[in-house]
Image 1 (cartoon, helix red, strand yellow):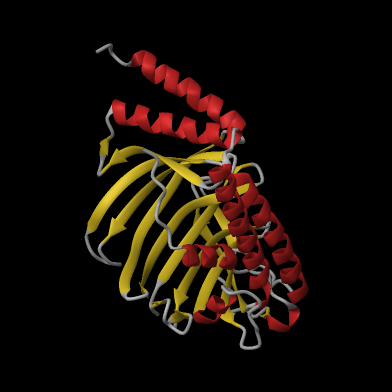
Image 2: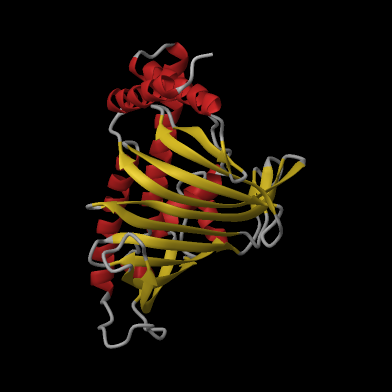
Length: 317
């Protein structure tokens, strides 16, 4: 069975936007708050604006490239931000044509049975085949998926007006994908711009978030985004739901292929209410083993070959 991971769409959208903030001249201070790496010049406001324009362009390209990569996701769920593990599972994740599909690899530290693995791979092949030969239901799902992608792209561009940024300094941070195992990154504090007027239904979210981002200046890519929800976020005056203040989230990206930076870590610690029912998302997702498999027409051939090999290895009943 292919499992679609439940995800808090709103905080995911905030991740994406905070990871690509470009700051307009009126909202930017190039102020040194005590650089971790000393001896480097403070960038000018013009240099920072130019950097973030290219960062946004690269992030749009990264989002497009992600559709042609598979990866392995290890998801750990907690009862709350500091409590015991509820579950742990590892999935192989691929693009289905209208989103992501997941093939379960292990559950709570134990590999799934060969039969379960074959069943899930067969389901994945069927999903990819549907992408190549769509029916009406698939076309409807595709339209919804394309709408979500447009909204995400618009949110990235909207973020360029939502924050005031303070240049903090440069830090050397660990990155297993980097040639020497670490990167020197430029750090910015992001605070809501009081003059910002939201132009989208999700734009109001930015007014409730304070964040920090780390940018690789040479690659013009975001390496890390970390945010705190500092006040409650209400939807339709709180009737439809609310995300409570105190939430925290982290995203990290690394260069998984030349010029392609994709997520390697998500951390969600968010609580809220949807209508009358409370919810909590307390997860750590570690992402690795990126491999380009191409569009569905190519990915299906890779899976078919692997499935044939699994079937050939299975003992006859």
